[in-house]
Length: 303
Length: 308
Image 1: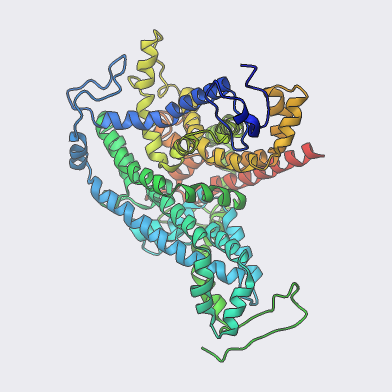
Image 2: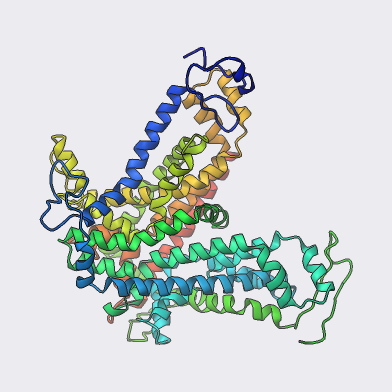
């Protein structure tokens, strides 16, 4: 072991024939084999802890009514996998209607946040007018307000507008979030000004400069805003719980809570419901990972 | 469009960016209007009206009148309020240290670009993507009296644990769920910070004979200290406002006698419904604001003290 674990630069490695499998890190330095084994062992352990619960839920949802789901020792794989529970959950609560409601809310949230935050962000970053600093301050203050502390007042506001118990009421309070406005403002601020200036000289008006030049240059940030708007709306719980009271209007998260509260003893049904709720997001995440990770960085710096 | 004008106003802007204007005087406001309108109507107005309502006896269907500090005096004698304050505070104390430390260790584990590491990073992030309701229900099932965790314990010969029947165990389980869901998020924040730690520092320390633990404490921790403060601030504010985890694991009433109620649960329970006491719930909300701001200042201040 000691013969290979010296911190000799990797460039010299080809000279000495390798006896053990060599793995190098990003700097081309060799990684010790036992250290690597320990690393993978730990990684697999954490993997079991983070992904295991999801798989267990999936497995439970596929177990038939005759299979014992409480067995000890536990059986991880369903002996006779069936989609029966997915049919039964749809008979118990209108789960597909709820999924459609969630989709509507999430899609609306994406559109309004992208449009509203891009427009306002551009106004804060690029346009010069009296009151720009006040407008910026308004968004910064709004970002600092803890939403949990104002839900009751938001609810009474919705009642006054007659929008409680509607999907519009679910979307409205977060439909142009201050954080997204500030994210877009930052993105626009980082663009080189000269391009827009050139467009101006060519006779482009403010809308053309925004839509044709600035907006395409911040597509990455816009994608982050879109993804987090979708995820935020799809996953949200507290606000829809407060604003929706009619079970026919429920979103998926509220519907699941209802299912859990009313039919708590049928674990297979709840499991099937949660799988329906989480699967779309896991697919979305698998396809668009880098935007998710980028969003964490940008959101954390601002938040 | 009005006749376009180019306003140079030379000398007011530095670094050669000329002030360019080709817009209606109103157009900046047209651009900002949707955002300002929504923010004003659904964030700032509710914020102000929460403050105002906290001094009234407003109910959902009754406008209510000014009652001075009556709501706040009532809070002092409301056992449920103190239970909520205690639980929310315990939540901060339980969750924040774990969320400052564990994701850092996790980030160190996934930092090296070894084969398959992007898969592991993504997998560790998955709980962040899932809705808190999904996560809560998954763990309610896992920690059920006859759920997976207990059946594993039984297989090992231990007696089952009532994770979801004892008031303290419920709170502890909910904290565990919060930490489990937050790990991946803060891991990504730490990864960005670790990328900026100069490698030479580690190598120098290794040459000096420092072991892994020693290097962690005297190289890694000082280098990512500002990120740790950021994580502490973010996670403590979020932990104090905990709602969903406890709501799902202890039930809407926070256990049979409400002994697991958190402050935000109390706000939700008191202020909604047709008989909701909007005024009183607003007073609790004001306490949530004050503590949230205090927590932020406390973390930032602790940071400055340590620095000097």
